[in-house]
Amino acid sequence: KRFPAASVRGMDYWGAMWGYAKEQCERNAEIEGVAERSAFQHGDAAKLDFPDDHFDAAVSNFVFHEVRTQKDKFMLVEESLRVLKKGGAFALHDTFENRDLYGKMDEFITYLKEKGISDISYLPHSECRIDMPLPVRFMLRGMGILYGTK
Image (spheres, rainbow, N blue to C red):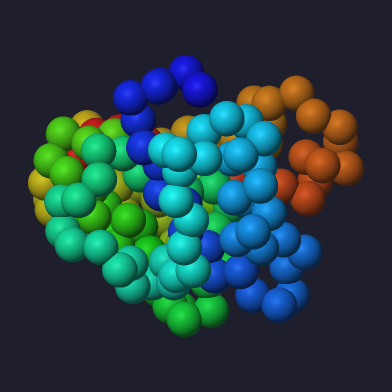
């Protein structure tokens, strides 16, 4: 609503284990009055069905750790950045503090800089920076936000 010229593409795997679906997202967009600028599709974050340099922005929230088709979670970050135009903004929020899944974030950020992502920042432990009930904070422990421009 805050960006009336924007069109948004939402993608999810929508597996049977989740209690929501594409139709629910479409209904929500209709309720919010943005359905004509929104599209939703089934897809896999490990292989996005879009060409290189396609989007002006990329956002992912609490997704990568759930993707079963790609063991190397950093490959999911790279795939998100692949479809982003040069100069496009990104904000990727996931369990980046889980070293079993992601290793050392400083090493990955150095790698991304070497690949040409010069404007990149990382905010670790985002669950500690947002006011929320303690049980929720516990469930979301180890979250971090990787953000910047390509």
